[in-house]
Image (cartoon, rainbow over all chains, first blue to last red):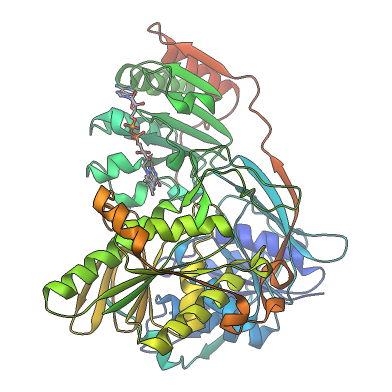
Length: 329
Length: 277
Ligand SMILES: Cc1cc2nc3c(=O)[nH]c(=O)nc-3n(C[C@H](O)[C@H](O)[C@H](O)COP(=O)(O)OP(=O)(O)OC[C@H]3O[C@@H](n4cnc5c(N)ncnc54)[C@H](O)[C@@H]3O)c2cc1C
């Protein structure tokens, strides 16, 4: 029996991020008869976050406010996490594997002695009850399983790692909501937020959790229209290489790779992408990899399940057109 | 202005990298190098030191690494890139340290350096391109109780404060803190210089101090494999992809790809209706 705490990442509007339900699902299996608690930092959850969390097995939601202190500062978040762990007695904390959560986890671990696994693709308990997480490393070329040896295990799961499921039995319609105010220490705000510019909202799915990701690189020569058209046809996200973002062709938040977003969608389609090792590090764990590039020597073909030696400007529109035709029957 | 840069020696990411039976990275491939992102960290520090000198202040950049014999290459590279002095923590008991063990050792080095003369700024790369957890900068800042300004794509110093711009998935942020502080930089922060012949010759004369855990007063039981908070149980290379298709476009490759994707149910068969909770 254990209490598993889930960090409930949400948008600035107060809407729950869908991938959090994957964490709640994983948390149920780890709780081993214990309870799943959620931690909601900031203003009240908006509908339908609470009933949805309830249907996914979250028994209690701790809504913590930090008053005038900005909880988007990761040292502040780390103190809120430490307080919630103390309050709930949780032995496992699950959160999405984002840069912000990694920073907070690192600080929480220094404060509490917890062990941390980042970018986990799965988590379970072994026969001895230890929390064991799997992840791919070395640019997706190796898979490891590692056990956390400490009393508190912090596992940061990649979006899409787990398929979210409702609870089978009659679940409470909504979790119990416990509201707390926390006075954070002055040291947590020594690095102060001067300005914060939210990314422009997009109708496309979140890159890190999308099922399908269509990626453009230098080969697009700045014209992302064929990439976007295919992404929209299949309800996918648009990604890019560093070259494309450096050139200013598309926003930096779309960059996939070791210094950008890590993705592992069911389907990755790269067009005009050479497959440099820095890029591969962020996408090589994708389920199926498709590459379109006129250079048969491009390294991306070494890892592609389906490679087309060709020009993206003729191949991609044909894919989009044909999908549209076939799906309309 | 005294700036300390933490650098790591890692296997070259262009090389074939592997894990050993103990789940640890094989580090004896002989093609180790400074972690590329740490070159950005050194460059950021050297530029800030140059600016301080231009303004008439004294400035020093010290590079620090923790690791086996080979790791000295990483600080040597830092010296070639313009750092003034180096510290290498070399101790068998450090082998197998996790990020928190490493942070404890680096913190001990920083405290020791701080006793000699105050350290104004600590700079690191945003992540090690081997383990890629990006936990170290925040862990080190917390251990040293310094304000942290991480993932900086832009760093400026003025009036005893450091300001950074950082690009996150959902927002762009600007953070500021009084010195002393810790900054981690991304590869967007700058373009690391290429060391010239003069720089390489000058680096040979610069001091590298080698320290052990005993010198630092760090208990070996708290670091290394013994102190690690996670334990790798299994490590396996990813199985090669099977059934691979490579075709040259004959004018119909796009249409065939569309059919292949639908056959394998890789794209939704009905158009997307948008995400609902
Ligand atoms: C420390 C560091 C970190 C980095 N981190 C990242 C990262 O996170 N992500 C990242 O992506 N990169 C990263 N990079 C950069 C990386 O090394 C590569 O430079 C980059 O990924 C290359 O992008 P690209 O494939 O778009 O461009 P290129 O390598 O120039 O390849 C362009 C490809 O487009 C093809 N092409 C040209 N015309 C067409 C056409 N009409 N149709 C189809 N194909 C065409 C060409 O044949 C070529 O293969 C990093 C580099 C460093 C040093």
